[in-house]
Amino acid sequence: MEAAGRKEEEGGEEYKMKIETINQDKEKNRIQFIVKDSSAYFVNTLRRVFMEEVPVMAIEDVEFRDNSSALYDEMIALRLGLLPITTDLKSYNIPEECTCKGKGCSKCTLKLILSVKKSGIVYAKDLKSKDPKCKPVFPDTPIVKLLKGQSLELEATAVLGKGKEHAKWNPGLFFYQQYPNIEISKEGEQCEEAAIKCPVDVYQFKDGRLNIVNQNNCHLCQACTEACSGIKVKGSDKDFIFTIESWGQLEPKDIVKTGVEEFNKKLDEFTKLLK
Image (tube, rainbow, N blue to C red; front, side):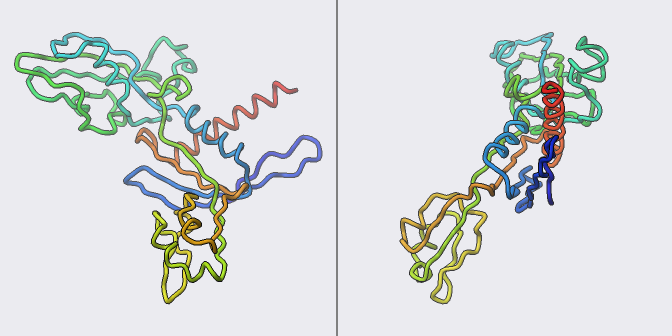
């Protein structure tokens, strides 16, 4: 896939970069892709946009009606706030951008009810959401343990927010590295030690020759170069491996799509301010 950058207003050339997906794991909500013909500052900008500007749902307010557990209200509220909640960006608005102007309505707030009056562990799945599309990502997350005669009853309010405001609105883990450029000399082709020392199985020694079989796995640790002087590994200055690991509120592809939309909004706003 090719992504075209914006043309400069006066006679600028169109900037293009290529994006190639190399690994996608739906069970782990993880995706990896190569960004080619780009730069470190641009890729890092994408990382910060995905981390700070993509809105997700999280519990913001908790109203306790009964709490006889061993934990203070504040401790339970903190745990509830850090529970990842599946997010439907089409049905909800950020409170400040909602038609109710942040007062709270069905378009910008989600209510969850918790009522447990028996001994045992209270789990995230005990939270009953008013919207079946928005519920705890990990239902078996423990919240608190109740003893005989103890109870916990509360109403929680979840809203959309961004990671730049609080970590609980962070949609996932985002990181990148330089793409590895590997050169093997004739001397290096005979080095079986490099395949043994490599911790991520980049090489395979077969029929008396060292071969590169998983170049994308290389994380530039230089273990192979230390084992054999005939190997050189250097990170590219224009190609990068980008990894997204979602906490589960949104799928990785939705994080990318929403992040790019937010990035374009900021560019448009910046252009207007310059004019």
